[in-house]
Image 1 (spheres, rainbow, N blue to C red):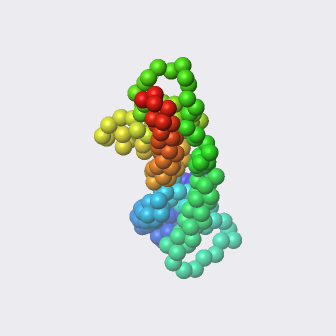
Image 2 (tube, rainbow, N blue to C red; image 1 turned 120 degrees about the vertical axis):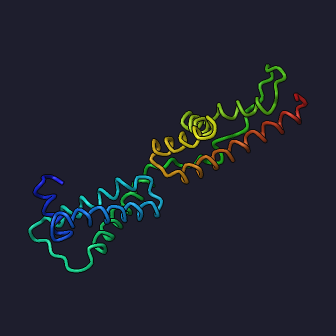
Image 3 (cartoon, rainbow, N blue to C red; image 1 turned 90 degrees about the vertical axis):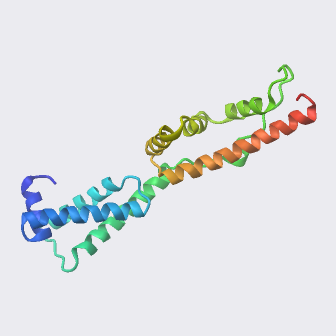
Length: 193
């Protein structure tokens, strides 16, 4: 809210007086948070606050008129904010690697006999764009609770939900697996194993 007076006017609009308006405010905020979480938003609190702020700005305009269920009005505003958030998420999502983005590495005849799986993994990782390589390494680092926390932080930094992050890593890992399998097959046929 812009001022204490506008907050007071908004609370009165919600509940008839400031005390009941404040209770109603908290109830509506909690419902909005649950609604956004249910829809998979990782920033549910922020979106709930934005919904309330936009509603308050609209309500406090002198020409505002609304008759009906307050929750229905809030849900309508929340729907618009959710759709804006989805569009923003789609714009900032990392695009998947094209299938041709990871070819099996060319053999280097000067290399000594290495442990093929590790050698191939290193070669394929080094062929990834640096952002993709960093994503994979950060996703799989740490153990137990630190791994879970790290993945949540990574998803927040990327501006995607945890599920979207898992899908990106799954696709990236499959591309990496194809590269490693191709490398191993070529090494086995050349007899350098």
